[in-house]
Image (cartoon, rainbow, N blue to C red; front, side, top):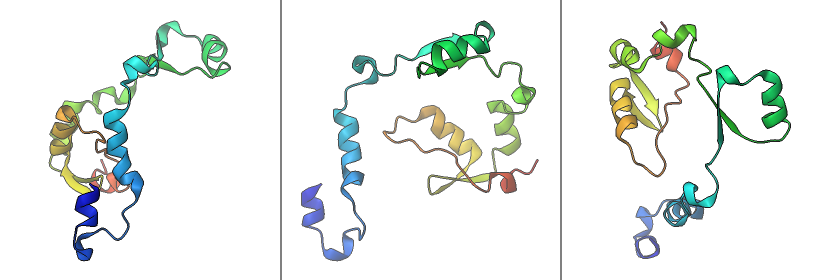
Length: 133
């Protein structure tokens, strides 16, 4: 990277190139996998088997992370926020994803098949305008 930046004509060098932008990819390549680092082995508990008191005692007070599985299994929105339903209803709508314009169908395909170090996320502040229903 250094040779390409240092040797590049001045007009081609980003005016605001910071070392963290270059270091991030390096860090991802050389970091230990979560599975071997002891990180990523978060406790998991089914929502149906976890009382509020048990959650507070075992996780909240202790500051221990937990993945609560099935907490939204009976949510009313389950039927309308299904991936296939969203794709059928909003697939052609364009949203802004990480600085790019994506149709929802394109983004869902990207999300399904991506292996990026830093994947794109759909955080469009105008989502409600693009999909008012």
